[in-house]
Amino acid sequence: MGLFYEDLTVGQVFITPRRTVTEADIVNFAGVSGDFNPLHTDELHARKTPFGQRVAHGLLVFAILTGLRQRTGVFEGTLIAWLEIRRYRFLKPVFIGDTVWGETEVLEMRETSRPDRGIVVQRVRVYNQKEEVVQEGELVTLIRRRGEANHL
Image 1: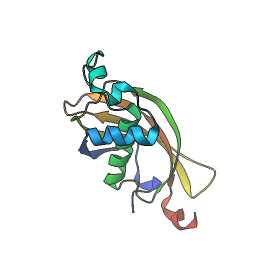
Image 2: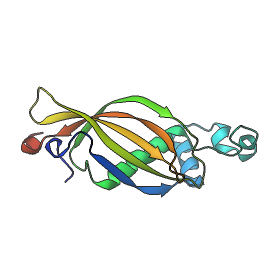
Image 3: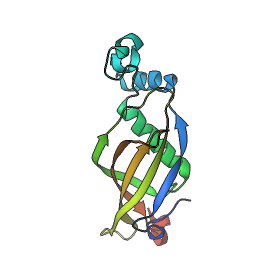
């Protein structure tokens, strides 16, 4: 079981494992999303862009972040829902072969009118292998409270 609302503190930081972005990731994401923009799927086209090569879909990288966060187990079974994604920014491109990892910091916590849950605002950042921030933003989440976990 992951951490409950009461287990969290403002300023707490969680680091995810790393993962390398592959061509298969881009092809599969294009198929699922329907986004076959040549910037992602056509090497010859992408070479003519300012990036000089194919770029991973921004939302693919965000999806990878969510999977990496899940692998930490921090919110396993205690995350009820995402309520909002705030001020999310795509700062740098991610290319095939880049290795990414995430960082989550608890920014604020507040109780709700229901005793079985609390709201937690988290800053998330995605880094590449050069330790550059490639994406960042805030997630507003609903997290189970310890004493009420069995009453949902």
